[in-house]
Image (cartoon, rainbow, N blue to C red; front, top):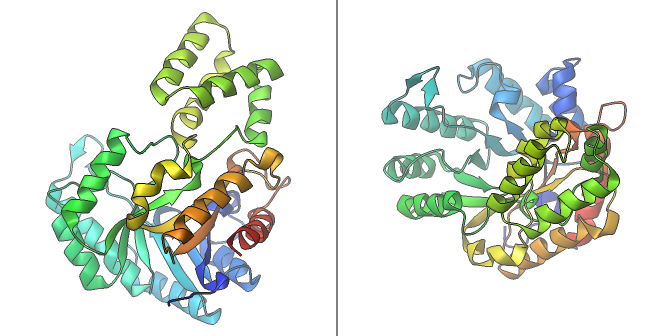
Length: 332
């Protein structure tokens, strides 16, 4: 559509309902139906391994059940989160096996009436790109590589991914941005978790300052030195994956040259507050940059705070409701 409405562009990912999925009191399908019944969205994204027991080997009954649920609420699958499985144990899969699995996942998106398949940046190679692109075109769905966290425009992973997109030479193989790229501070809930490791308020502030002012390599070296010298508690090591991969501090403008290749967006957030405009500022800049470039795709709320909040503190539905209000204001 040339001028889609907010409701047509707004999506929610069930990844934000991870705590509900882990609890197991309801099936993934029941959680999806409950989310759609709330009226919060008409577009839902699911992660294949979270939703389907034997993904990517999904049986017809599961496909039918999901299609019926979507039709019941006049909803659509925006993206299916897939993956490239390149090994079983110590056995590496052949390129043909990987390509075959990804083609099957593209066909699953087609059967579900979805928009596209979301993949990690290294899901397939330049040599494999033409076959995947042809399959995506035949299925009438998109392949989008997710750029997120600590990646930067000059990151070797980013540049390699762009080369794969160019090798595919297809309008059906593109990129997506996750706003975890554009953080201006540590989320409040992460800071509270850091406090529980024994870090003082001043130590948290110092760590945040180094993270903001350093590139990833410099920050890693500094943090490892702090751990080895005992300057910070050893429990902080458990947060290393978050510091080094899940959160980044680039700016939307740094990625402006990528806008022609962007086909979907995750608006990542961790808390239901916006202290210091940490959420609003980068999100507003990102939306303005994309809209100015003519972007008409999805803006998907993705709550990552389930990792640090319990269900008793905050549910996926509560977090999403807060964020939708914010996104609607910013987009309008």
